[in-house]
Every structure is written in C-alpha cells, then in structure tokens.
Image (cartoon, rainbow, N blue to C red):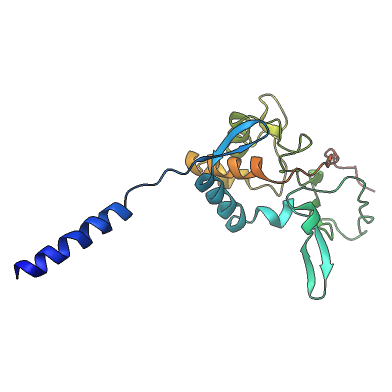
Length: 192
C-alpha cells in the first residue's frame, strides 16, 4: 500500500504543476508590446461566433452563394462599390446589398464599418472609444456623435462583459490592416 502511495505522489505533483496558470508573453509589433496571445485568440473566437463577419466582411460569389472576401476581412463596405437602384416596391422592407455590407431602411442607407487595424478602420481608436461604441451605440465611440445605425446590434452588446469587449478590441487591433474609407451614412430620401 505504501508503495502505491509513493508512486501516486509524483504523478500528483506533475499534474498540479501542469495545471499552474500560464501567462503568455505579450505579442509585439513595430510599435512595441501588444495584447497577450490568449486575449487575441479569445477576441478572434468572439468575433467569429458573434457574427461580426456577417456584415463587416464583404462577400464575393462562390459556387454555392456569397462567401467572405479573403482580401477584405472585416474591411466593411468597400469604397466605390455601387449599390443597385432601390426597387420601386421596397416600402416597408429593409434591403441589403449583395456583399451584405450596405443596408437600406427608414433610417436611410448605412454601411458596415471597417474594423481592421488600419487608420481608416479602428487603428487609431482607443479601447475607451471601442467600449463606448459597443455599449452606448455612438458612431466611432465619440461622445456627441450620431447613433450607430441598423443593423448594428449595439443594444445587444450594451451589457457585454468588459473582458470580452477588451478581447474583441485586442483581436481587431491585431488584424491585417485594410485601407478602406467606408462611405458616410445617407439619410432617407422623401417619398418618390
């Protein structure tokens, strides 16, 4: 019996040592330290499961329908992409572009924002701006700015766990920068 206990003890020591918390080294780039790898990975996971790509990544046509454009991941509505004319019988409907990055409704026309790390995206944003955009629905997270427009579900994110919001921000700041100036919101036009 004692022999069994002696053999078990080293196994427990090894098990407890392998369960010890591991703090990854921070990632670095040309500007110095960035977010820890596990925080960025958590943010990437959240962006995937929360459906951010549904609107913020332009689509291209694949053999079975629209698929994310790999050259413009999270770049928002691509500048210069024309929209088709609004159908005459669209009153009472909300419409979306073929790339699923532009939306027409009673609020006018809204465009999905560039969420990449480029300066035309969120590259110059502070974490505080990002939190304000998600939880208060303010355009670019700026106090005094206009509200974010549909279909951005900021009301669903108003109570996001701050740790999850920080992870999303860390991931977005780590993305490949895509230069793309998204068009401005177009207010609704009067009855035709």
